[in-house]
Image (cartoon, rainbow, N blue to C red; front, side, top):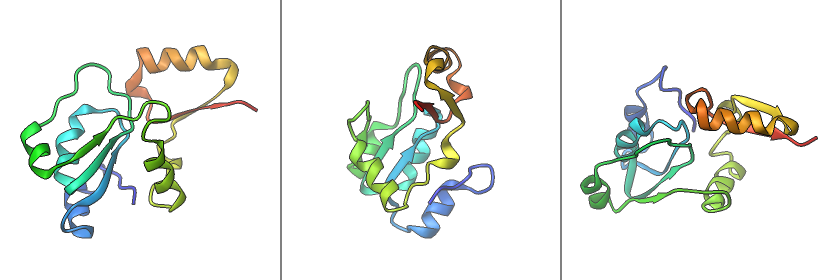
Length: 130
């Protein structure tokens, strides 16, 4: 399930569908301010997958996470890939709405510049190698 935070109260919507909380919460926006909300949505014990790029410091309520026995995944390249790929395969995670940029591979330097200098402008980016 993918929900638009501008259209619904995410925490209330997740609680409506999953009264005990979601097994896995994927945060892909790159906004560290969303981490407390992720802790509210995940079940005990659940998993939070931080799939976005989070420049700067990231903090969350350790006591709340510890109490819920949450596992937080910080995938880097292939680490944690199995969680995401399984969700995509089961059609539990639809990535198309998350892709904001598709650049040809020869524009890789520009893609890297955007990631470093303008991370707020990107939700998801693909390099087209065709």
